[in-house]
Image (tube, rainbow, N blue to C red; front, side, top):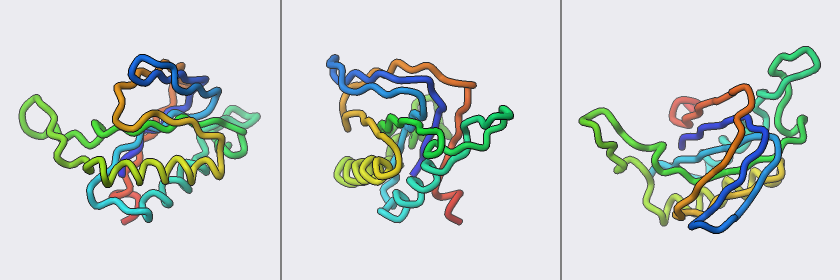
Amino acid sequence: MKAVIQRIRGAKLTADGIPHSQSGAGMLILLGVCPEDTEKEVDFLVRKCANLRIFEDENGKMNVSPTDAKAEVMAVSQFTLMGDCSQGNRPYFGTAARPEIAKPLYERFCTELAKHLPTKTGVFGADMQIETVCDGPVTILMDTKELMK
């Protein structure tokens, strides 16, 4: 499972041309699922995201978690994170989980994260547009294959 986490000032998401969700200051999480991912990877990544100290303390240091910062989250399924560009110029997406595997894991990620933080979602499989204001910018990449070794 891969995640791109951005600290944001806010985000608005439109799905298939219809306004769907909006979040305030916090994090935008783009989530990619591999075929071999399970609930174990989801639960691990939820803990990491809920406790990731990327918000500034009173001294301007990134020491505050989103939970402590009272941050909001927008979590969006993003199969293109699994794109393999090692050969040629067209990404290969065969390393992304099929929808019947990815959708339940994405939904579990959102449900479990919502136990820690106010969480807005995208629409799985939809054509989405996200308007966001990055804060910092702060962007963190996580890959459970690397983190769970």
